[in-house]
Length: 420
Image (cartoon, rainbow, N blue to C red; front, side, top):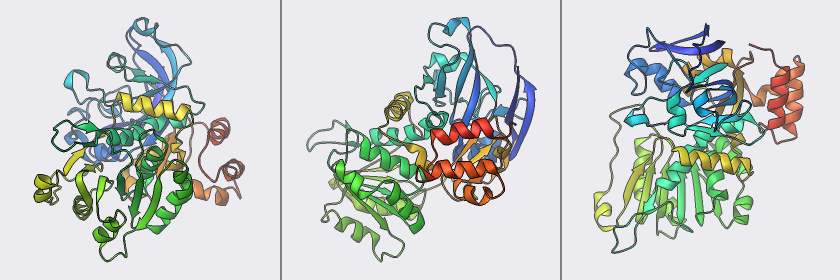
């Protein structure tokens, strides 16, 4: 079978090509990709090429497929896995397989599996590590968002606390405690707010900071303090841009007790140091943001580490259990990460979008791999709809849903957009 895909050949060298997939083996699965959510990690892999930890050295000869936040439908199952998977099943993939200790992952390391493709061959390793995950929801894009959603789930599971006199780490955020997400009004912040409000283990106070008022306003509209209050949470949005002393102001929201859990969602030295100063006794700083600078450093108060039992943790992605939790919560309607999506595009938009990802404003860029469509902001659908009936109808569909991407919009797009 032929596939169209975006492949990485070297630093900043992405090419969209059509080529023949090899014959499927008995321990492999042939699948169709429908949607892929572009990730900053793909930008980093593109910029670094073979210097990236997950990218092979020989991509100039054996290029790899990019994209790791993808979902689709199984077409054919090899004999080894026919007891577990069937043609027609919807799937999502956990890329962080850790197969025999290797960093190899779909979307970085393999020649025939990646999200920015029309068809792929899923290798045996993915099933061996139980990383091919079924999805019972009605929309492909939600399954694509399971991977980024699992990242915030994993972060909140990775935070930990101890009781005085005990060295036992009690995993997870402090229930009923004070929690803050710094630089938390972006797409991943929206996912974290959604999860913090609607999961079983909740904070009592949740403070979201940012320096972009437009992002804060959008976040507050999507996840309102009124909605959070229904779940027993006091939710506050704070623009720290014009606050003279952010640490003092934020600590004042806790009567100067400090925060039990502080998540840093941007790799900024000052932000890490602010988070450290916000911590209360036994407070946990979770460095969520992934820096591209291998020498990134920030100062921490080690007096507080010794006497205040403050501590630091960090996570890079979620594990398979985190992703299963994300898929389950989405299928049951407990969380809806659709608000993360601000742009839609086709397979032919992948190369330019991936290379320019840091400079394109907004949230998640969602790619549908079987259509041809320039990357387009949802906010621009009305403008383009004046001359394009497809965008006009999409605008009307999204208007019914507060301009948040939806299953109805996805189905219309897949039926009516120009094929790649």
